Image 1 (cartoon, rainbow, N blue to C red):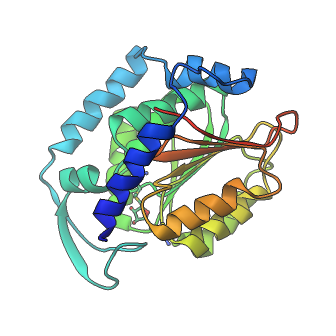
Image 2 (image 1 turned 60 degrees about the horizontal axis):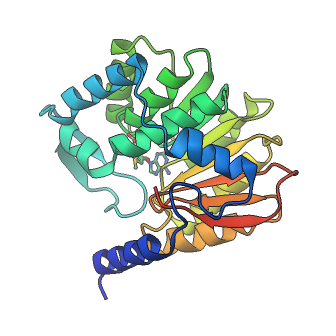
Length: 263
Ligand SMILES: C[S@@+](CC[C@H](N)C(=O)[O-])C[C@H]1O[C@@H](n2cnc3c(N)ncnc32)[C@H](O)[C@@H]1O
């Protein structure tokens, strides 16, 4: 079976068996409130609308970038010519899930934030707009993409720190700058081994309220395996599978539970 078909079947399974998005049958007040205030939040404030506008204009930007791709699902050392708009369509988080990240950052008042995988800075723009006073670092390996990410941040008057380098070599030094982390968005190098490595490194900086957000948890067998290991890690109390993204909570007062919730 090809991977696209497998993904569609996984989605059908999720759609049929996920818990209702209205929170029916959820006993945990923490998760119930998360559903009510974040997953079901339809409000769009002025700040998010300004990011939507920038997103819409870059999504049709024809400027071509030339670079060598890195990460899972790519052909190493092959130069690519691809427009900014196409990069966003193929690999950036879509509006629905960017709003989710925005709402999560606001709801949890996250201040110390890291994003692993900036690309051209779409999700980074939502994160920074949700927390303008945050100590937010976004990491990306490709210089040409970082330039656009910085341009978008400047347009929105955001003060995100973008750092260029391979996650495998720079994540440790980025983590050293933080005493602890409130939120980490994992969105790059979707290989099992690397995803688990980044997860384990970031674990050193968690506190009781830290939130980890993983993109593309069902995107491949490797990501599926990584997600299963992560949600069953002894330090993890609660996981929430929203199909495209997975959320991880460490709050010691919560009982161990893996939720699958329709989003
Ligand atoms: C899915 S994209 C990120 C999308 C971005 N979060 C957004 O929504 O706009 C993943 C990014 O991770 C970068 N990447 C993958 N593996 C990497 C590595 N080992 N070191 C540095 N960057 C890497 C890729 O260049 C790519 O731009």
